[in-house]
Image (cartoon, rainbow, N blue to C red):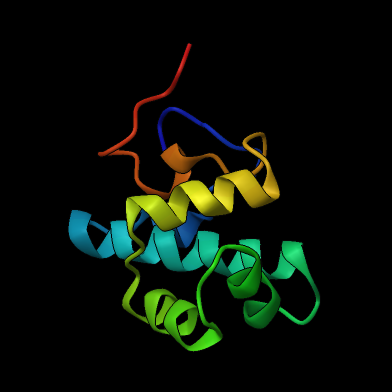
Length: 98
């Protein structure tokens, strides 16, 4: 990401994906994987419960690389804006707040 909005450095492999739609999906997969592990070593199940999703629904979202704006906000609220801001998941939808 050109405008770094979180504390996680973007991996080189992500920046090298030329197709924007594919890169956006991979970014969501990557951020969700980080969020699940950050929340708990048990991963997806505990984060899903914390944000009001089923573990299966969160696993599907991660697999598809798509997450609704409402769920992105729930992740941000649960884990903190400083590490998991909504702009990191959906930079085309959310703009960086000043």
